[in-house]
Image 1 (cartoon, rainbow, N blue to C red):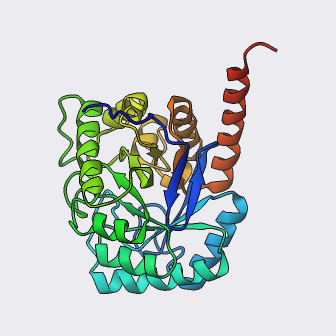
Image 2: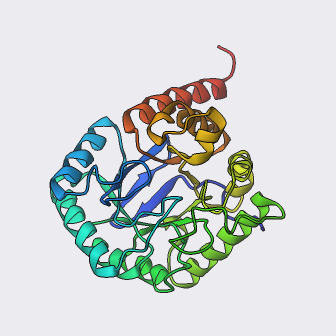
Image 3: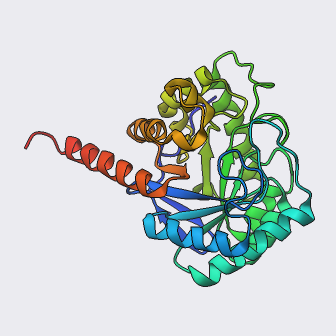
Length: 297
């Protein structure tokens, strides 16, 4: 992993047709339009339920609504074919773009055709949990639309990327950084502008709990690559292992702890289920950080 010559943290994230300023913590509210996601599968599977949930998240302080139509849950994830994922995602993106024009829309997909269709319906961001590994056309689609591109670290396929099957590292922070750097270089070569790229270290994806902790602690090293960092600790398995909480929905307090720690280490974007609690906790932590930077009263 080598540090880029660009500043470690960009001031803004350029996404299709707009910018997201990074002058405070920014939240991506998770909207799973799937029957089988690990924490909330089936809750927002219908377009009407999805739209209502998106409106609620926007009211609670979400800056971005992240729409996903394929689960990568740790146990038993099955790939969704392109036609089915389009059927799940496109109507929701279309409705969101019309109903909530001020809300930035992200599509969580590993398929370039799904990304292309969603961007055509008004999405602004592609959040690819494979970082473009699983579909070589993804970066070119992002470049053509001028979309923001979240490049997440993972290994393996949709079936096994959230398991421990590929969790072998020499130095997890260095290895994750090097793999993210390679994916970012591929995106740049495909025409994605540097200020459109965000990196996500992929907590829990091909990572045991000790790996996720090390990656969180290593955020300053990842920031040195020159891209904003997004963290998604929400309800993750490592939070449950640390807190002794087996139920994903019961992991809120641990999630907030992980995100506040990540904020203080330099992360600026957070993918969350519980928007109101995340908004309040991160805003308070941000205010404390700003006051500390001012020095003694």
